[in-house]
Image (cartoon, rainbow, N blue to C red):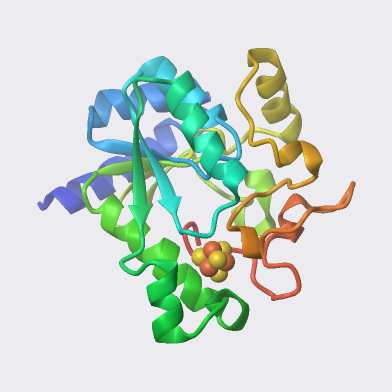
Length: 231
Ligand code: SF4
């Protein structure tokens, strides 16, 4: 059997065995199973997942998709994460082309004309290339984020990227999530406090009115709800 087939079988088994696992149990299993061979993804909206992961592995690798379109506050949060969790190694995954090079080839503001292609070039491809160096990745996807995420398992096989995917906080409600932030004083992107409840690239992120779906601020009016990273 190939390593891929081995890991696929492992993920299928762990999916059942860890179906009710706490976030810490899922992360401990990840470290015991993969050692250094996994990475934690963060969009730098907050450091909840990073805080949980560093409790079981202080020198964990953290993946940040540096699209070139982030808010300065998001870059600041990334740098603050490095200061607060000095052991972590932040891996900035970048697109092959700079924004200027992309503008020269495809025309400016591709995100307005074809956000799927822009996300493919600046997120999906760099993610895939980075994940190819690991056997597993950990994400902060939660079931309450969106209807498309309602059945997110704690452990699964990520067929698209060819590695094991762990979603330790998948079952967490908003109350649990916000409670963890306030109880532990977790670092948060300052944009959250002024109404940006789901933060992505600046051109594709809007404020969300009170009571509205947090992800309604992403690609507002463009009929797009996901980057293609977790679908
Ligand atoms: S979120 Fe917007 S700017 Fe960022 S990669 Fe996707 S389309 Fe481009």
